[in-house]
Length: 318
Image 1 (cartoon, rainbow, N blue to C red):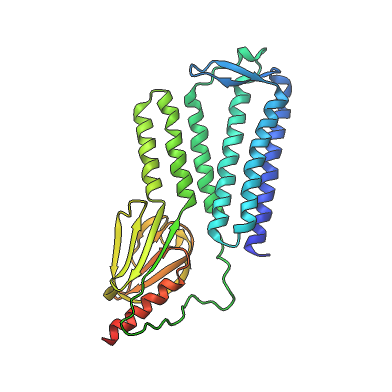
Image 2 (tube, rainbow, N blue to C red):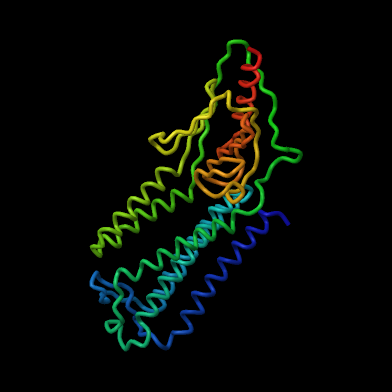
């Protein structure tokens, strides 16, 4: 059984398991909550809206099933790549924790109340642990889904074909990579700053918003190869920039790397290697003249590696 098949089976089982938890939890407390139940709370924490018990359960189930179906449908198309599997697992993990957590909060507030108006107060700050749990669930989902290699053609060992430049010919290769998970985390952090803002917790709101903006800004990178070397710039402002001069490179190749193999996400420095890792999978791998390896996760790195090697050959012939 391939990684793709196992991952799709595990995703389907996870979707069914979370659905069963929502149903079992609702049935277990059916006789201990009013009908209708409190389903909305104002800024003061007091309940100000209600919904039939079955209606609220239906909303929770539909919300979860939409998240699960979209994630699994995406996985069917992208499960060949580890980055696609990891993104799907992150969505499934974060979505499950959020839906189950909000369901538990609502049930707890309505428990043993004679009428929905007598439901326990639910201050805005009580939602924060659910959001934190959803972020943790997304991270754990990413970690669990980021297993196994990308599907590669049989016999492909990562070496690249020889590219020959004509005398005087100039060539430039540009590619990019975008971390969908970092985009989601950055966007979620910015959106979550609204909750402490409404509660007038200004410091928490500012910290959450700034963290989201920073993560969002560093969620993409652009890699350019030309006669000067390899240049990697981050975010829409193309800053900061990491430059590796051509004379510092011994050769280039393509390798498949996971974040854990290079020290984690982002810019990582280990004793024998450096990495710019925004997603697991194929990387432009540079062997430097110092003996260190430099890995850059980027889409379609084969042509970039070919051009680096061709430029090195051309430079050595001068």
